[in-house]
Length: 312
Ligand code: SF4
Figure 1 (cartoon, rainbow, N blue to C red):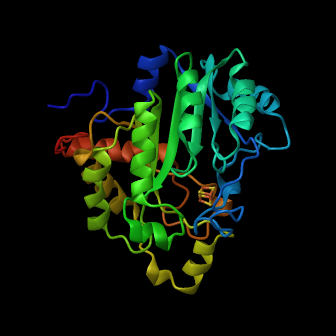
Figure 2 (cartoon, rainbow, N blue to C red; figure 1 turned 90 degrees about the vertical axis):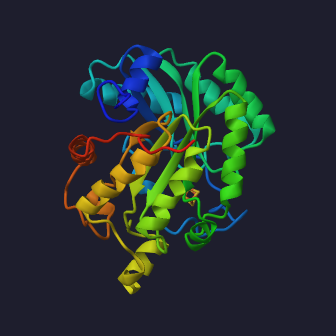
Figure 3 (cartoon, rainbow, N blue to C red; figure 1 turned 90 degrees about the horizontal axis):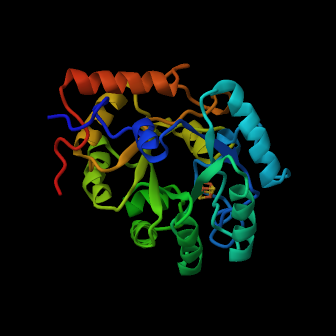
């Protein structure tokens, strides 16, 4: 029997209601971090699909202080989401733990000194965390909501090499385990449709991923973004890629979700890059929330739910 209240999956909105008792909105911050896969420490080309501009809201510019970005972000969201009274500062761009500990303390301290900010969402790579940083975030987590979101992208080391991630699946597992052990919420981000992966190999990942101590998870269909190495590879040889057709994606996600650990809160099923950044638009102008509705309808139609076939 479906164990979830309003949906057939562990939904992010319900999780937020349970955690905060009210609507909470994220305010994106670009604190001017970089990434070891771009600044030359690991590599300089970055992951083959990466163009951070495509994910960054317009109010979010690193030349402005964190406090200014928070003030402007809250103003921006107040118009759209009148019921949101609390906000999470979302450090999304590049690798937001890739700096000396004193810099992290200064930036995150600024964000948390803002009275409307209830906590931090920190996006980073699995190789950009260490014991000293975890100790700091663990102390913050005693008083605030803190989640560290790791870009996993795939559990397959061959794929990680192919997309030039510069880290392994084993590093991902270690970072997530240590973070959870330190009492910090953990998030993960996965991309479906990466070159070299088939529907079957993507589905096989669910068992490994389900064993991680994750709080939340986000799924993205692969989108080919302009001005990336992947865009050049796509233009040269589109046959290397299998971009999901919409119906195929909906059916794939249903299969993945029914095998997924039901304790994981699903934050999103799809990514949404602004169309002007995309090389290819296989789903036309369809918005993420419309795809979510299609997935919900398909779960209903098949009378299935998250974790129905989860094997512990
Ligand atoms: S996707 Fe993230 S880890 Fe990869 S190059 Fe871009 S910022 Fe760095």
